[in-house]
Image: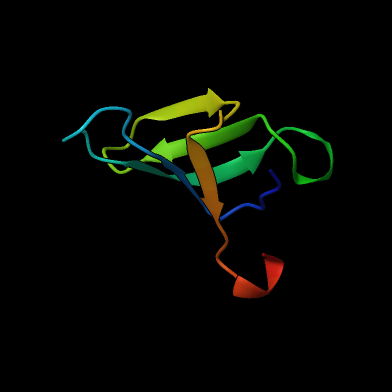
Length: 65
């Protein structure tokens, strides 16, 4: 899973009715665009995450996919 600053990390809900969480990647801490990522959620909360299999990166530039 590779990302660049400005991409979005989408963490899918794990149970029925649970909404996806969307965060902007503000810093890539791993080498070559790999996790961990420093992310900022819509409510302003920031965290360092190493995304699991329930997560996807939405690239700001569609050519990166």
